Amino acid sequence: MPLREIQESVQQIAEAVASVLRVEVEIADHHLLRIAGTGQTQPGVLRTMAGEDHVYRSSLFAGQPVVITHPGEDDRCKPCMHYGNCAETGEICCPIQMDGKNVGVIGLLAFDPSQRERLFTDVDSILNFLQKIAELIASKLKEHLMYVEQQLTLEKLRVLMDELDKAMLIVDQSDQIVQANQRARQYLLLQTLATEGSARAKEWITAIRKVDSSGITPKKVMLAVGEEEKEFLFAIKPIQLEGTTREWVITIDDVREVVEIARQVGGFERQDAFSRIVGNSPAIAQAKEVARRVADSESTVLLYGESGTGKELFAKAVHQESQRRNLPFVSINCAAIPEHLLESELFGYEDGSFTGARRGGKIGLLEAASRGTIFLDEIGDMPLHVQGKLLRVLQEREIMRVGSTGRTIPLKARIIAATHHDLRSRVEQGAFRMDLFYRLYVIPIFLPSLKERREDILIIANDCLQRCSQRLGKNVIGFSQETQAILFHYDWPGNVRELANAIEYAVNMETSALIETKSLPLELREKRERVEVSGRTSTSDMNLPLNLKELERAAIQQALSQVEQTRGRKEDAAEWLGISRATLFRKIKEYGLS
Ligand SMILES: Nc1ncnc2c1ncn2[C@@H]1O[C@H](COP(=O)(O)OP(=O)(O)OP(=O)(O)O)[C@@H](O)[C@H]1O
Image (cartoon, rainbow, N blue to C red; front, side):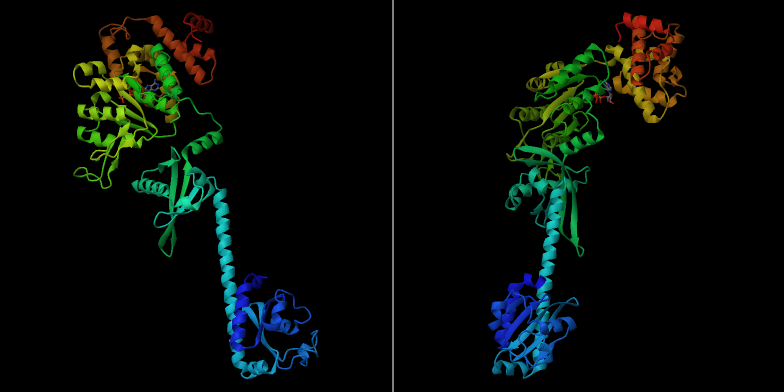
């Protein structure tokens, strides 16, 4: 069968040999199907030679040439249907061998005296020549089979690539896409290979190469797909041959799909980001409510609050609950970056814009946030000249890199700003631009300090305790009553951050199930000791009226939430609190707790 696959080439060879030797040529495959023929044998091409194939059969069987000087008379011709009546005047044939296997036979035939003479004048030379032609045919066949094999491998590769649920691209040395699987074509909206050479595709590869060389992991890149910018995770691997990289395989996953799959496989629903913000005080409940409502909006959010009140936590929750959740959340602390660097950090810079600038320029954080969220922390401390630039960016919704001669980049990110300053008074002092203030003051959210919402202290403390205990592998489950009183009345200048640190310290120190006062950090204990030395009760030194009811309500609430989190019974809460079950239920009713 294989010889038949190169029938045209075999016929051409037969004709070439016939015209050189001026005898007729016949070539058959290993089933003795005539593949090529010249002169009188040509009409029989692609027909079986059954009945007249005996000489070829014996050559094929023995793997040796056969020379018949008197066809029709030779004993070896006896079984042939033309025996005694053969039109041929002579015949020389030899097997065609490929990798030690007989794949066919080539015969030279004479039908008249002159052809006979040419055939038998120098039989050795003719046989030698015939063998060379047989080798040529075998090498043609081998080449063809290798080509088929290669095509098959490519086809298998294509089918495999298309079956993958990852997008896969193969790019060459000049960053042209030479192959793209079905998924890649879907993601990148490629219809045909023609578009794969387009400028857009080149942009993608450039973006991928840039991120790849940055060494940052995971490798994430924003690629423009149609009208949309999508975030992808990618891996790039070289294809090497003889020590040289010839091409690269780039595999790409749509971040949103990865997250979705992880969620499905994990069998969990996405947790509401606001549930991480602990606290039941009216101020926090209202802040959460406002933040939740505006999460999916484009509007700028301005978070007010002292250090450690949860401004960044809120900003992240807003981002997480928006459609931008799988896009970047980029945070910059405007007070922490030296003034001369802040501008280029925010807006980026063009190549060679100042001495020491990185070659190729640098992307700014506003640009890096892409369609995600940019969190401008401590915006009240932004230098005035940067405020002016930021205002322009917010008004025009266009970013201009430092040193740019007019090229602008669209601002697509959502802005969330935060400050611990009273921005209005900063405006009055001339330290903050009024026009920028009003650009930012769209959705203000106030986060009160912990001492202004003491009812949250024990709830947050308890939440920190659960997490910390679990993380550190400790079995600390609550606070002694005296500890609760100290936590409750301490002023927490560092707010939730300080509270969380104090609890982590205490969990590390504590050896029993409840955190005792001796395990608290020094500054909390000192407060208590000062109080005791001055002869007052431990909770009365905070310049707060001693409100026992408030303290009792908080203690009960804390015990109840502890029970809820540990899936325990209300009876356990009564036990922790050192009161009877009936008293607990009466107090729950009295304080309106559930
Ligand atoms: N209501 C809360 N519930 C749980 N954790 C909180 C809460 N508020 C703050 N935290 C935690 O306290 C720490 C400080 O919060 P965050 O960084 O958001 O405060 P911030 O106001 O941005 O502080 P800064 O202005 O100093 O940057 C974080 O670990 C945060 O997770």
